[in-house]
Each structure stands twice: as structure tokens, then as C-alpha cells.
Amino acid sequence: MTFPISIRQLTEFDRSALERHFLGLRDADRRLRFGVVLPDSALRGYVERIDFTRDAVFASIGDDLEIVAVAHLAHNGNDGELGVSVLSEHRRRGVGTALLARAHTRARNLGLHVLFVHCLTENGAMMHIARREAMRIVSDGPEADAFLGLEPADAESRIGEAFEQAVGLFDYALKAHLAVPKAIAQA
Image (cartoon, rainbow, N blue to C red):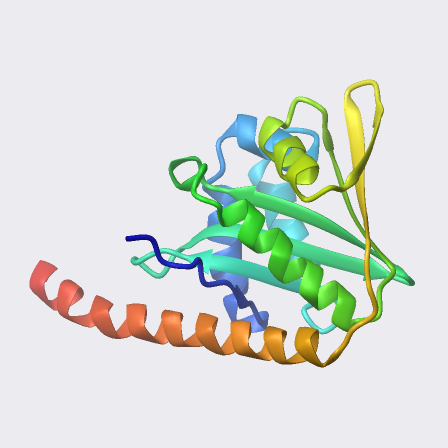
């Protein structure tokens, strides 16, 4: 039996968990996510500069309450840029696609017109997701941009986003509740 992947929007209070996620990426994964291998200091700076009141950051949380996958939706004007990272042991399970779907809904509800992803063409996972989601892909040498036109927000997208956030918060609360006996047993 498979369960849907719950995604919740992060807040300022999740900044340290977000930093741990990015610092946990291997060099190859940092390169695929950011286009270059960022040192730890640059990753810390990136996380520190995220404006949680303007941008939206979504995450999938593991049973240990650590972030296993993140999508950062940065927007300026009418467009939103999405960056996605998934820890290697959680790939090929649909988490990246779930993050894209959640960011897509948020972008619509913000009134954005286009959602795009800038990545290296060698980023097979991101290119696969972009093709499957029928994004228009423009390649220029080692880099590619994938674009998705967005429909205007409607009642379904607004209610859907609220429901998805509630499910994500419930999932986190349940995992936090179940973590207490595990911590006691390990102590």
C-alpha cells in the first residue's frame, strides 16, 4: 500500500532544519541543485537570506522529523522560480513531483503567471519531472529552463492548498508524537 506524500509549507521556525537539509546534500547534489558545489558557508548564507514572508518553502518530513526534500518558490513580479532538492535515499518515490505540484498550487494562488525551473541539463530527475508535467523546456548548452504557464487561482486551488497544508501539519504532528516513545526507548 502506498500513501500520498504530505508536504507542508515551512516557516521562519524551520530555518535550522532547512539548513541541516542543505548541509546534508552531497557535493554532486549541491551542484545539481544550485548549479555549482556551494561550500557550507554559502549554503548557510542562502538559508539565512530566505524571506519566508515573500517566498514559499515546502518540505517533505521524514519519520525522524528531518527534512528529506525541499522546494523553494521564489517570486518576483509575475513569475516564480522553483528550486528542488531531495536527499538521495528518498528519490524515485514521487517526492519531487509532489513538491512541484504543491508549489504549482501556491504559485497559482499568488497570482503568478509562469512557474519556471532553472537547472543543469544533466539533472535527469528534474528534466524528467519537467517533461512529465508538460513544461516547456529551453536548453542552452549545459543549462536548461523549464516553464509552466499557470491558470488563475480558483476556489478549488485555494481550498486545495489549505487542505494540503492541514494534512502536512497533521503529518508532522503525528510524526512528532510517535518520535517521543522512540526517543525514550533509545535513552
